[in-house]
Length: 332
Ligand code: NDP
Image 1 (cartoon, rainbow, N blue to C red):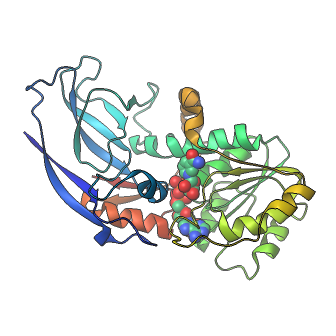
Image 2: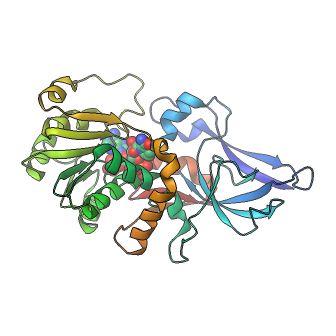
């Protein structure tokens, strides 16, 4: 008999999440031997904390539900010959130390995954966030060599991959992030220009200085005030991929404009929201490409690892506050 620890949403978040909004519980898992045909038992090794959990909890969860989320897990017992003991997989079982699966919602790591690449990357650069950068840039921004790409939250899981893929694609890349340490990291991984959006005296001036001719593509992870200013720096026929709006996730009262219509009209811009799940039938292709670039050293990665399942709420809140450089991960 296995006792799983789980984190439950005790109280819906109001404004910024608090640790008291979560509750740690223990649940007894049924024995696999008792009617567990084709089932298998997994233990989480790494869990992901992601911005989407904030708006999705509001939309899809009720108080008392186990927090949504993904993990890299190891199979520890199996009645299913397709899922052998010892294999590592990506699960979508939420904030749990152990869980039982029948194979639905389970993905194997790409077969070419080498020992030298940490498996936690399957939650970051070679996982959903990396794919978000890949499809957002290629399919929504439709970046072309020689163009200038702007990305915000640039030192995070998605943003850091956006910048590096845009460089691989022959673009000039401008990024911004919330600390000088993050800005230094962006330069280190090849961004042409980077600035700290929290300390510049004028965002407008910083965007102009970084690319006086403006931007062809804007990969927007942040929304709000930054996006309202950046839109005025788009070139004619520029493309904006609306990936995230983290500056708005904790608002209980929606922010007011400025509104996008005037620059959209006069610059004839394209602005498209997207969810990475739109390309789920092509994920394997994206993961293969990302893993290859990581192995070749063309895409660098950084992880912000918090130790201990007990610290999941703190890791989640820390990520929303910007404590993470690269992907925020919890190691069980
Ligand atoms: P990150 O690793 O980038 O972590 C979040 C970062 O957001 C923080 O580190 C912080 O960095 C920044 N941030 C937090 N609050 C603000 C704020 N008020 N203004 C500006 N920046 C802020 O997360 P991800 O890379 O996982 O996600 C980035 C974005 O992409 C999110 O908006 C997320 O919802 C979205 N997303 C969308 C997907 C889709 O399918 N459309 C899929 C995956 C992610 P800093 O220190 O720089 O402020």
